[in-house]
Image (cartoon, rainbow, N blue to C red):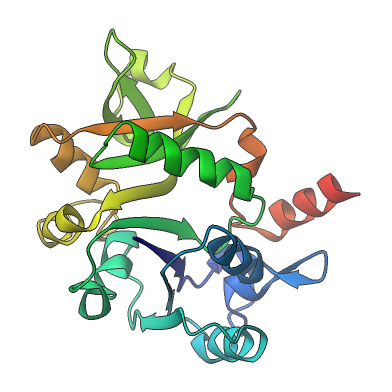
Length: 245
C-alpha cells in the first residue's frame, strides 16, 4: 500500500504575491501542483492527500475541478509551522493506514515518474524503514548534507547551520522527498520539537530520530538533480521555464 502526501500549504513569501498560493503558479501554463498530482496518480498511489493552507480554496477548487479520482483528499494546515507540522495534519486520515508513505513537495514539478518508481523500488528492495532522495549539487549551500558511513550507508542528515567545515564540503544534499513506513512516521512526528531559529517543526528531524533508534534508513541518489529543484522565487520559476524552451 502506498499513500502520497503533498506539501502544498506554503505562502511562498518570496514569490511576492500574497493573493496567490505558491503551488498555483504555472510552469508552461500548468499549475505546479498539477505536476505533482499527475505523478502521484501515475505511480498508482492508494491515497493522495494534499496538505493545503495559504489561499487553500484556489488549490482545492483547482484539484477538485480537474481530477475526479476518489483517491484524492485534503488536509488543512491552518498555521504554517513547518513541514513536520504539515504532515501531522494528515494523522486523522492516516491513522488506519498500513503501508509506505511518500512525501512530496507541491512546488517540485520536474520529478519524473520513472525516478520515483526507482526510488520506491530502492526503498522496498532494501527493506528500509525510511528513505530519502539525495542529489549532488555543484553548490550545496543552504541544503542539509547527506552523511554516509564507510560502507556508503546513510547515517544522518546534517543541516547547513549544524555542519562543521568538513561536512559543509559534502555536495550530496537532501531533496526533502521521503518514503517512510507508516507505523513509525507519526510516532516520530509526535516527538519533533520547534527547537530551532524558525520555531518550526521540521520533517528532517524524524531522520535524526531514526538514526538514533537504529532504524534502517537509506538515501537514493537521483541521476538528474534538476528533477528535485523546488521553486521559491519568481526567478527560479523563470529558470525552469527556460529549461523547457
